[in-house]
Length: 91
Image 1 (cartoon, rainbow, N blue to C red):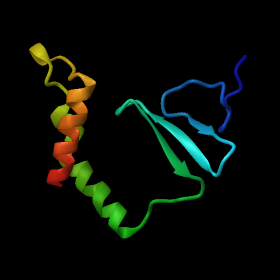
Image 2: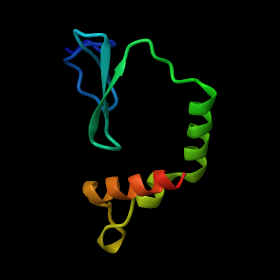
Image 3: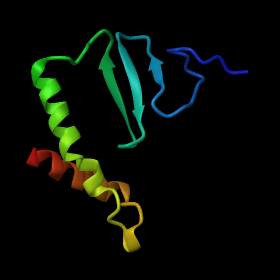
């Protein structure tokens, strides 16, 4: 029986927060297939960040890169990341 609480290392679900021995948290982001490390207690709520988030929400750059494989299938991860980088630079 798995205990599902924040910081429990044994739970393997997409997007689940894993605590570390240091002052940071590790997030697995399935959309980019990477681990993201953030310092605990950092809330990204400045006006600049919120404006950037709104611009990204309007543009939907990931959607523009999502189905570029053969026959409209899912884009391979390497090409998806390249496309996403280009889309984000346009913003």
